[in-house]
Length: 369
Image (cartoon, rainbow, N blue to C red; front, side, top):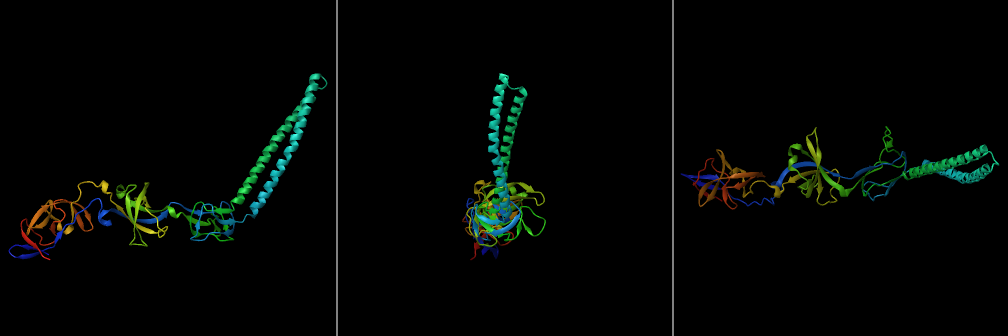
């Protein structure tokens, strides 16, 4: 206790020695926190893998919690109809290509006939009409050959489509990750679009890229000016309240939600851990950047109860040499029940933290243990 001596001895409160303050490395998270928010762990890459065609599931090769690699087969769709279509397309292609050699032979023969008739016409042994008919027949065969080649190319394209339909019966992982859900079973119908009923699935499995986990929070637009990309953040998972996870702001989404008056902020973990799972609840504390601190640096921290408002000034009473000394002070930010002192006192001095409502400069006092 601090004992103030007047006509009689009075208990005036505690004498507290002030700690020094390093504004560049605040002691304690609360001392450096400028904003708190809550959100969820979300992956940047999450995909519900579905078949590109409508069909019946033949086999599912993935289960919840299984790690998968890019291109790994997740499921097989019944390809009976697709293989039948491929066989028909292949037969059409073979037939279309078979007609081309015969047309080539006929075209060559028609070309020789036309050349002979042309020579006979010039010699006067053949009339012009016969030559014109042979020339027209030659040109018609050339057109038929071009048409046959186009038909063969179209048949080849249909065969490639049929082959792709068979490939579409194999569902593969689009990227490496972990399967977090298994949404279809063998025998069920799947479709890339909703069929409007409850018996057709639209997905096979949901894959999450665990290396892309980050935090997504909504920050009130009134405080978004305090947030900047690269800013340090301390995250605390609801599942592990004693685990402080270092992170940093990755980006501030450049749009606001007009209904909630919030802006979405995405935060990247400095280092991932297997305990961090998608959709976990998380609380984040945005930390002040010491390099961007404005105004003078704080000299000390004092309890908020030691700062007395006397008129338009703020002051504290410092104990030294058995007497109280009134010190006008300039205060800064509040820190967990303490107040920054920008000027007026220095670290190591003892200030009155309680006592009578009215104290005076030069008053005798002593610190009582």
